[in-house]
Length: 94
Image (cartoon, rainbow, N blue to C red; front, top):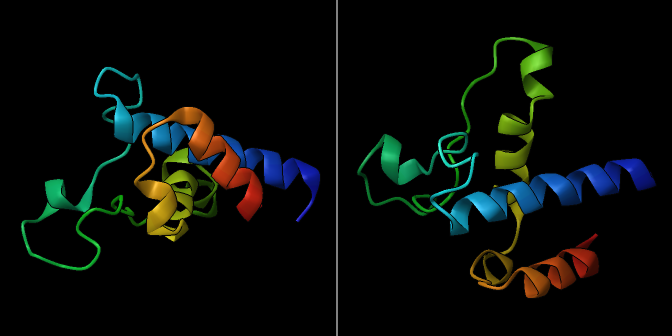
């Protein structure tokens, strides 16, 4: 993974984190949790919903890549509440 890819991944993860912690974010409606889509008690109920992009362009959007990146993070990172702790954990992972 190149430095640019890593930086983009970190930025997408930060956007997903910001959305999950703040309801007033401009991305509050951009990412959707699975619990908003269905009410089944699944293992992934707290993950972000991955919509099905119809084109390769759709697979490159932050809406898809950010959700997929967030869902691949360990639960220990997802539950962090402070931005500095989240950033430090991401730097360790990437």
